[in-house]
Image 1: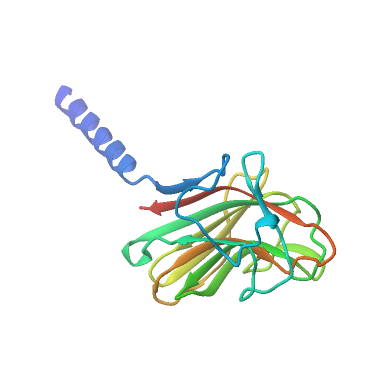
Image 2: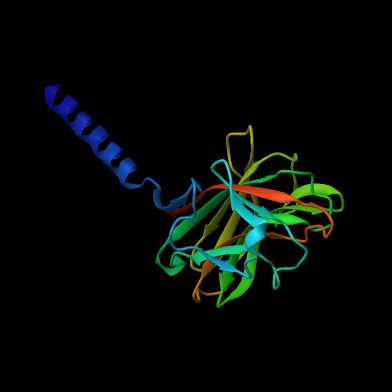
Amino acid sequence: MRFIAACVCLLILGLIGQSRGAEDQVIFEDRFEGKLADGWSWLRENPGYWRIREGALEIRIEPGVAQTVRNALVRKAPDRSQGKFAVELTVQNLSPLTNQYEQAGITWYCGGKPVFKLVKELLDGQVCIIPGKKLIEDKPVRLRLVVSADRYVAQYRVEGTEEFLTAAEGSLPPPQDDEVSIQGYHGPVDAEHWIRFDDFRIIKLP
């Protein structure tokens, strides 16, 4: 009996060790506490239209499209040919979205070009997650973009809920100087619409 009990204990300890070894690994994090972390750069910066305030990054959303977006905050992305990674970001609009396609969230770049976005967006008068066109309440939302060598999974979790939901899945082009960006566009010309971004993380998944 003692021998069996010892074997069971060893098996349990081994399983615990495997579980710990399989945990997610945060490889970069920025909570925007006072300043931007090292490694960020601005694409078409407009200095008066972004700020660090109360432990978050806030960007005023200007008119524009993906190719002309102002104040896109960009950094080098992990090498997805070497595994699976998740990029997470909390997004909150500080005033109601009013413009068709007004949006904010995560954009993925390959070879200097935007190839994919996971955003909170106003579409035909309804707030939704794009891709997937998943209707959501107009609350802060946690975005989670999972990427691998040739695939993405776009997920989201609205404030007050426990689990990530999948909005869409699909293919990505092969890695090529990948970058990930925090940004928003299609904002109004005559009103100040600020988006609050918080708790940006890049995670290596098992």
